[in-house]
Length: 226
Image 1: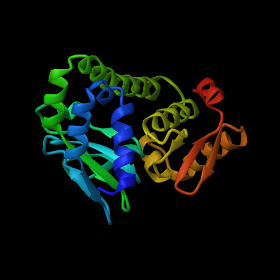
Image 2 (image 1 turned 60 degrees about the horizontal axis):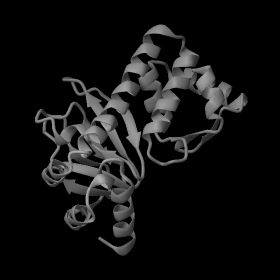
Image 3 (image 1 turned 45 degrees about the horizontal axis):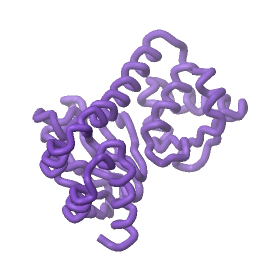
Image 4 (image 1 turned 180 degrees about the horizontal axis):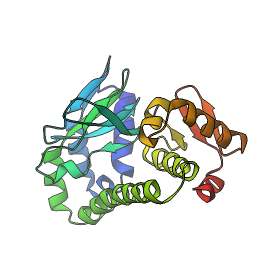
């Protein structure tokens, strides 16, 4: 691990709502065990058929969580950018993951052994409520999205989806990292329909469209729209 990656990882551990509760000695132990994965192409970090054995931190690029059907159909349900940790649930659930964990081309990912984190948390019980809060926050976002999908119209669903994706991106900039094709798939609409809806939000000054990302520029008004 080079000096920049080490500094980024050290800061991410120290500022994590979970790992920041560990003693400096335990934090240093995690840092020494961390390995950097450099992804030239799209890289499968953990498949839906296996239990995650690592906790992943995005240094550069992004990780996408992808669901697959039995006949091979795929849907990306979230994209997480620099500073994001994935996957807290996998630390304590001994069942296989429900989705593939895939690093985008050009990404750099830190992997920390899950067992080491479980052992560290066992010595600092205050970590458990923080882990539950991390998992609970993502579960609440999922429930909110299901409710929106069932109860409201397309424009409000799109606003809620963009807010949810931005909160999980980990960039700290309110950016949505998923491609428009993947957002259209989540919305269950055509790319042209999505394009028209996004242009409407942009014309209202709520978002800014750019290549490879969507920036939320007026979160308060977008929340009102949702």
